[in-house]
Image (cartoon, rainbow, N blue to C red; front, side):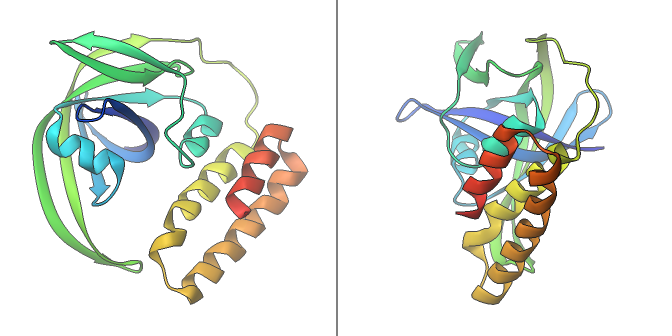
Amino acid sequence: MKCEVVITSKNNKDNSNNRAPIGIFIKGNKEIVMHLYEGSHTYNNLKDEDYFIINICSPYLIAKSVLDDNGNYGYLEYNNCSIPYLKESYKIYLAKITNRKIIESKNEYGSSKIMIVRSSVVLDKDINILPIKPYNRAEGLIVEMAILYSRLNIVNDEKRKNIKDEMEHYFKTIKKVGTKRYIELGKKFLE
């Protein structure tokens, strides 16, 4: 199964935290696989660090994490490491990297190096109670807008225009059905 989560990691060289929305593949009970693009903070951190945290959180927080690394961080101490997590998460999973493989990838957005990271879950912890509420279409659309937003700087002008048009289309629905914070976040993606 592929899930959208926020990965948090630490750069121990400059002591900075990183948060990034990532699609992960869950294999069995404990194995996690993810693909990280060269140049991202997460890629750079996990080239050197063996631990990271998978944050299960709201669609809003997943989308907001595209914009910057400013988060409300807590720290999990494990094996002489201090690994950041997002305090707003519902649940966190501490993962230890078991294998890294770097490949060259070519897709509609161009060529790039991808690090395929395999890891296993070594610990999980409930952080907040998952609210039970009706599904709102703005939740899925804001995540889709965030994914498109993250691709804007790696495409040519024609594809960029198509992506922006698609984002505008999603935003029309968010304005109809979303709360103020979803609308404000959507506006940031369109700036």
